[in-house]
Image: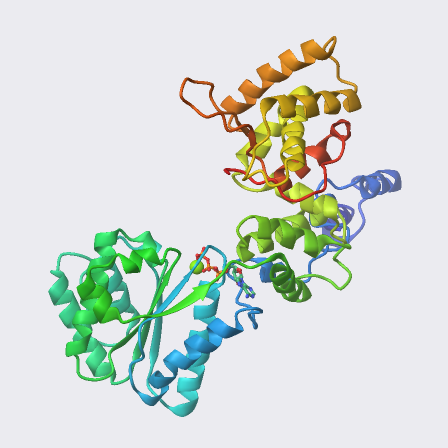
Length: 448
Ligand SMILES: Nc1ncnc2c1ncn2[C@@H]1O[C@H](COP(=O)(O)OP(=O)(O)OP(=O)(O)O)[C@@H](O)[C@H]1O
Ligand SMILES: [Mg+2]
């Protein structure tokens, strides 16, 4: 379109009249028009491919609802209710694995608390700080001070902590209403820094007149709080809210809600949500990972000019997954080595629960011979296949793709363990038809 307009303007001479000397022939114009534009596939055949609002699949998007976190939302809301009456609430501890919805829940509840406080005319401030962005107690108190209105300016460094806290305390008193402080990713601070922050915030806030601070502490690892010295743990008196990892069904519900906002109707091919959910459930039930998979698959579809996301896009999304070095290494291996990786997974499945008994190298080599025969790969007889298989076992062990125990005196040989999980093996299989299908039984998991 842009190109046509530019050429059109060339046709006009001074005064907007047509200039025959510079008028391109009809043939030339039509040639440029039919030439495929190299950017066309990147923006999708339909504008934006399957997307209506890509933003809704980004981590920073705040969803209206949080499926499967009703209990945690209610318990937090109940605990913060006193702040609407001008009183401080008990310290809340939100603990759970990555992507289990802790930050999303806190953001959701605090936004509604602020709304409710405004409706009832209760002065109240909510401050959320992500501790990973701060180095220690001083920076955190400083960030809190700067997030609150009023008070004299505090320097970025140089004051003793006590003085900084006194300035903050004066500010908290002057506010005349509760302040809810959410310290997210608290465990990104060093244990002494955590202790220092919590000691200051709990010990000193009890001296304040007025409601002072209500703390919301978010961590992955609850034992960090259990390990705090008794004087800090005792003052915290925290109420614990646990965020378990999501299972595949829960992740599918979460994805479905997001997809409703983010994608065109009919943009989801059959099985796509279930596949993204199942893969993310295998990787610790992380909703962030599930959303990332769906977004990358939708990007793949958009790049290929498709308006419908299918399972191939999801599999490409997995192989594009950041940091999946193991899959990238495995994809670059010669065919026999990839066959051996699959054979080790076959052998592990044949064992039933590989946590109880791992397959021996003999088992793996037997499956390797079967896979080679099916793929038409030969080494000149059964013995040669076993020799080549044994060499490859050692090579894959040194690449970190298989756990191959060392034979050493006094060491119990524990058998072979595949270190690629199902999703990664599926990428291998999808990339080369000669490998044959992955055996569909239960997941063979790594690091047993
Ligand atoms: N129940 C849910 N409903 C909708 N979206 C969710 C839900 N749980 C998590 N999410 C989304 O998943 C992503 C990760 O969630 P969140 O950031 O809350 O995880 P987290 O528990 O704080 O993880 P981390 O410990 O890594 O900080 C966010 O985009 C969030 O909106
Ligand atoms: Mg978080």
